[in-house]
Length: 130
Length: 111
Image 1 (cartoon, rainbow over the protein chains, first blue to last red):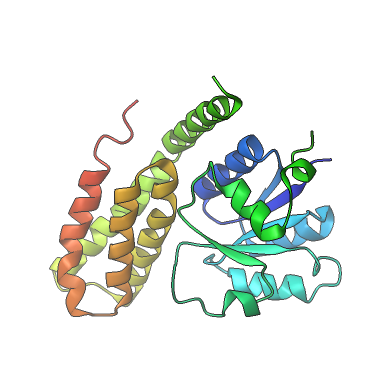
Image 2: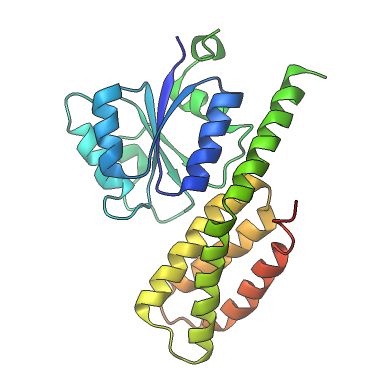
């Protein structure tokens, strides 16, 4: 069974590149949403194995979305990786936010799956679905 | 040809498709920066436009590098940093950086 990753990012181009990378290079099954609110709904309904969450989004930003996820009994246990183009100036230290880690944009589409596996402690064999 | 090379070719083709489909988004972000420069040069850059331009620069920083435009991504990051310093003396650098960004992307959407 392939691992399923939910990508939440308001930027369509970044969402599509991340999805292509994770599907084609990583062999994951991908779900996508363009806002924190839609992401929360999809996370509750689909229970993905992990969530890749953009920090800078309009309306509900990544930290607010993350806080709501972590306080939700249904999805609070799903590991979340933050995605940001800002190398500095996090509002909250990532290690204290409830996320398992932070990945910086721009990312290399050929390397993104292995970075995610590394953060989540997933091996190639358990995520490729083969 | 190895499996990895096959995957890289497939990914490269897919990225090219996404890049071409994203033209309107990218050009829209560049247009926002151009408008901000014009307002800046007239001494009329508002806080709202500055914030809009900062968001556009932030989004360009994040996306351009994924499509292989590393230099353009880096310039966009510099523009974002200068815009973030509200009414900073560094504002004078912004028009030149936006020009550099436009030059770095010249012809990038040609097939």
